[in-house]
Image (cartoon, rainbow, N blue to C red; front, side):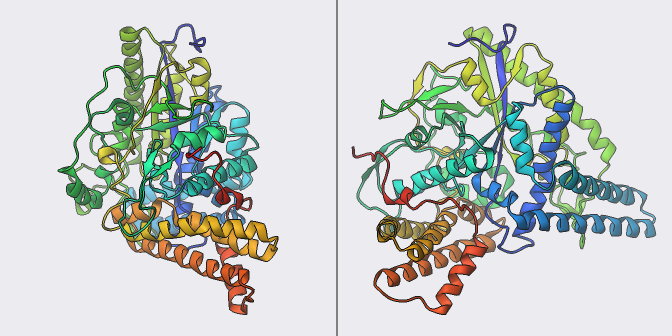
Length: 585
């Protein structure tokens, strides 16, 4: 084992925030579309950035491990985002001013106070975005990383659900595009990789789970860690039960009524595996791979004891009755003026939000979390004599967007842990450098969904999406090879855009939003849109290969797709043309 970071510390803490949204920037506005991106930028990404800057200014290095999916980064750096986000903030400022005036007319002083809070909040957000960060959030995060204060990690290009993708070419493209995009935006090789939905699959003979689509004969497929290793990625994160066994307690079911209904269909057939007594969630491991000549990849396990404190709206901090309620909004402006009140309260029973009372609750929650981290690590050290790690991963959008007080909790938590001599505040890479894993584990196929498997993303409601994905994935490698061999720039342009549409079709968001019922119509439309666009582009490519000419309508369609889905300028058809070191070798 390498030298510990601190001679006095018994372990380390790493906070992992996973930032992701599907590509919505040019696909509608409200209630689903670009406003989703603007909301999360204003309520989560920029406040997280501000929190890190605040800590640095106070002499505290936040050491956050920040996951940002390539598709999110592409949107936050898009010229349309920089312009439209400012317009969005202006709209929010005007709505708050109108609410304040109306509350004043109604002699509602409490409402007017919260309306003024919203106005000042969004005015400050606009000022910070334009003046402090020059309308470039990614550049600001890059500077924090370059200065050693945070670590930015990548993820699958469009958050494709890797274990269910139908070909190794598709998995390879999702990973290689992620690395290429990261290098373009952050100027270095990424070290860590967020598995979408913490979903992992080892090497084995895989066959399609659908009887009418995808490879039907079992075919030896590479494990997820193999793709990461050959692309220079050093670690990833999985759910606790993936390492320890036992019941897999998901992170989503409590938040979505649709998933609660769906889970009832799968609950009876779910049988938790035995709990491993020789492993712990408080150390990193190397992933045992069938291919021994590739660099080992480390894995961290999600800590459930700290996790429930932030994930759970019923048992965790966000469910505190004084905190701002996420669901109830005042229209037409859409601002929120009510507090959680209680976990059992319906929207009609919500009481008025009191900012000062909410602010008073944050220190207690932060102190409790810091104490919990301390107790876990000291107990682990006392029992094992080893330097441990508490890895606490959350969706970045939980802080600020879902839990308005979350960024302030983040500030107080990171500051509190940084002052504890028994705990080192680290990024994932810093922990690996200080405590090189010694033991290897074989991981089962899994996710961080309830029950630890794939039912949230593959079920009777979403089968049709996977049928379309599998059909496209099987056809595309041959088309990519033909385009590359042709030397025809126009053909390659068409097929490259088809590759973008395929990547977007593979996004895990569409089946997730259908299963949760949170934006079902929008997700169904988007999956259909990208499949139809892909199919038409493939038809255009095949006509050109056969010597046919493109119509004016086809040319206009291609240009429309290139404008609307203008992400990943570095997409490379060779990623689909052949698998690097295929499993059969």
